[in-house]
Amino acid sequence: MKNIVVLVSGGGTNLQALIDAEKRGDIKGGKITCVISSKADAYALERAKQNGIKTVTLVRKDFPDVHEYSKAMLETLKNEHADLVVYAGFMTILDETVCRAYPNKMMNVHPALIPSFCGKGFYGLHVHEAVLEKGVKVTGATVHFVTEVCDGGPIILQDTVPVLNGDTPEILQKRVMENVEWKILPKAVALFCEDKIRVENGRAYVDE
Ligand code: GAR
Image (cartoon, rainbow, N blue to C red):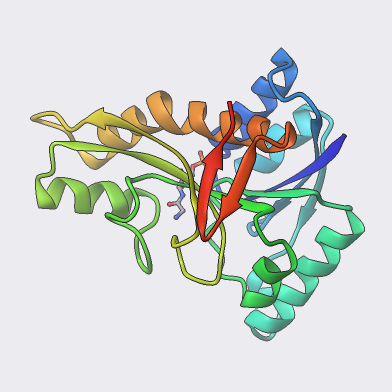
């Protein structure tokens, strides 16, 4: 059984999608064993507690710099014997020691079609604002492995939704979450736990 550790900072709807998938039996070979939050008041923590999942809170401002924060994160991940680390709306920067310790064992869900609308400054609602500003007609979400390059790691799964006249960032965010994020993140986690994701020459392949 692989130990899945989920990193959160906010509402935790993606965490909920993972919890629901696990409950349905869709994540064979894996179990969410710990949720780590970078915010003490994240509702995601409540969701974890309601489901009997261990929680740890690591607040960035309690540490002098990003390196000390990353050290604490690494220590926690090691203590939890993490086999897979999932960024599910985790908004705090870690240094490269963390992703180097978990090569192709750390995944992130990003609310756009990478390589568009990603990288520094593209997170949460800002992504959907930029999508509407540009006027693209299709958007979506991406699950990818985490590397030292922000949003630049091997792409595991993507799917799309249309951008419609009259969309606001909030409406678009909801469409992307409901139709894509809450589906592809649990699917990618399930595939990982069944050893169905291969990475070769920087590209991820799914063996279904
Ligand atoms: C999600 O839309 C996720 O894709 C995004 O933040 C939201 C978190 O929602 N993540 C990023 O923008 C990371 N770059 P949630 O807390 O309800 O899962």
